[in-house]
Image 1 (tube, helix red, strand yellow):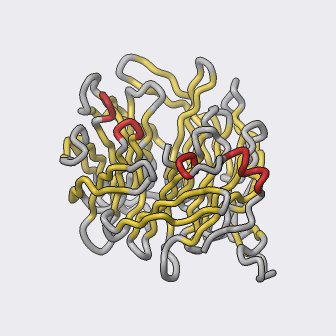
Image 2: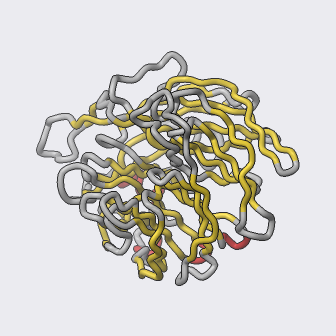
Length: 395
């Protein structure tokens, strides 16, 4: 299904008529085990290609634009997990280069090292931090890994029975990798060896007990650096001041607020999901699942029934103190916005709605940080639930 009711005046500012200049993106979907190529043009958001080579539960994608290579993680819930590399063609279609078996449940990846020859991966179920040598994109290889254990469960035993690493974040200096561990309430920190893809673990940062840190972002404001982590179990955002020393990264906690901002609250059953920073480093956006707290017009123009939606919540960063000011709570385009991304210009946000088999692209005001109208949407995934979980722009 394609959205054919896009404001043409708006799209004329974002796109040109030539197919080459269209906005291209990808989305992964659990329920039909597929990685989709999509294109946003005047006629809307359309599916242009589909790959099944990322495995049974394709999820996080990482793009190396310089090498025209896309990496896709397969969580492999019921079978084998894997890392797939693709050659990206000019039309954003994909050619499979290599498929490497990996430890179960890889959920996030980040490129690092000389010429982006390293790919760091967090494994949720197997409590492991791994790195891969991706210098030869057609011959991927495990480089290094570290698996963790816990002496006893954490404050939320059902979710903190073991370490659960959930995100890989390269710091602005490109000298450190930070990995939120939801199970152990830690921010694990690794120093990257200069000129190589090897790494060493250094002292972790202790998160608040029972918070369950899930995803994080760095923000730079002149000479200052801040770090924000979205906590899944407590549905909060924790802010840190970051300072550097030779071979060391220090984080001092500044605040801990609701995922809806200071004084905010969430319904029972809510699970904080994704956190992104705007390209200008002035705003962050968080997604929240299980709220169904908002509604929006139906995507079918013949249906007047409102669509339930979880929120995308935007905050402005105080450049002096790192504190957050709530800007907007907007519908995410449907239910369960597990993964979303912002384009490099900051003008578009693409959200994957896992429970609605839908990918939605919003306009974003770079000055105010607010999301505006929907400029495109498409059906992605087949079957009930567990549909698209991640969306990524081709840039």
